[in-house]
View 1 (cartoon, helix red, strand yellow):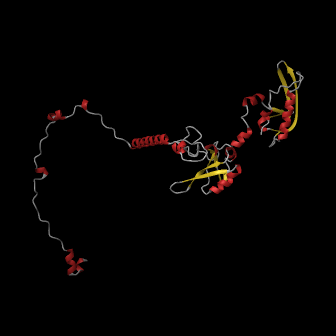
View 2 (view 1 turned 90 degrees about the vertical axis):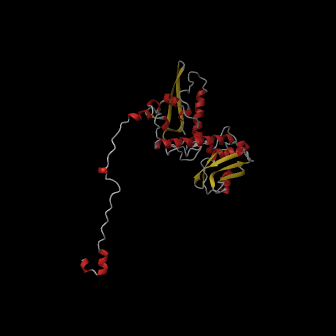
View 3 (view 1 turned 120 degrees about the vertical axis):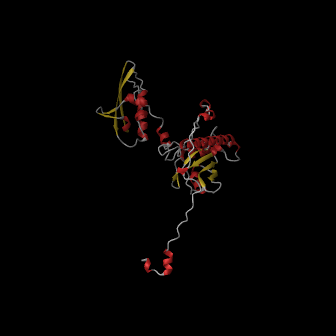
Length: 321
């Protein structure tokens, strides 16, 4: 194809001149005279004595370096925390509020205003001052506030009844001001506090509102002290008209007709109790007091032969709310 090119293009494909030959600057490797090997006996005295050789330095692995840095950070944080705890003294704070009349309110909706809090808590008594805590740099609310009442009894009422109250779609948590009332109390930033929403994983964190880790305090108070399980175990089951065995914990008393008959054998009383028991949802207070009155009347019987010792079953053991 190049034969058909014009002369000006054929000049581009012309071969170059051959490379000029130059003699090598030294002899070739196979032409050189090799140096004969020598022994090392003369260099033995220059080596280090093995008994004086220090042990080799172990290199730090990536995991060891990570653990070392983690431990150093923890020690630094613990040192700073110790210094801050030594400097923290809530008694020296310049505040004019009375700690025994002040209520702490947490888990507040970030959109809740001070006027909204005042309307919600004025039902318990007159309020002297509300401090809605905000971020110093951004000015955004931090989700908690302090409410000072005019009277201490109003603060106690709010502490008892306002816990778990829903305000702007969130259930708030109330507590007393512990910083100036509890000796040795530390805030959350210094390792104290009572919060349980950031203890660890989802299996240990508290997901509901309340001072008692999700347990309803009002219901616990209403039910009274825990029942004597040993006493219920001794009583066992109650028979309905002597026929059907029904567990006591699954029943509610719905009638006041209690028939008690007994006879004394030695020092112990054999008591037969026939009670109409059925499953229901509630027990009225009138029926409850009727049963207590019948029990008191049976205990105050003057005849020792027919006097009933109600030690086998107390009304509070089987009257379940």
